[in-house]
Image (cartoon, rainbow, N blue to C red; front, side, top):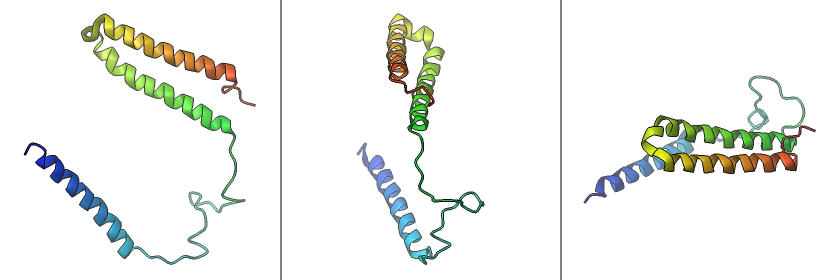
Length: 116
């Protein structure tokens, strides 16, 4: 009985998703044309092909940013609860930061931060 409401909520969520998809399928226009298949560039007329290759450095820099952004998201709650977690919490965060620094040094040595 304790999981009844969880199951009911999951079932209701599934109905909402399926209902939205079904309504979209039934109501949305399905006419394919030259203008509809044209890539949208924020109101600008597209110039050149839509599929171009980007420098892999953008992706590597984005991943490094994501890693350190997640690190900051983990460190803020730890800093707020610093007195409650004590020495064990400090050592765990120290290990977490050391692992990230090792990853940064590895990426640096592999040349992932070089913009060539």
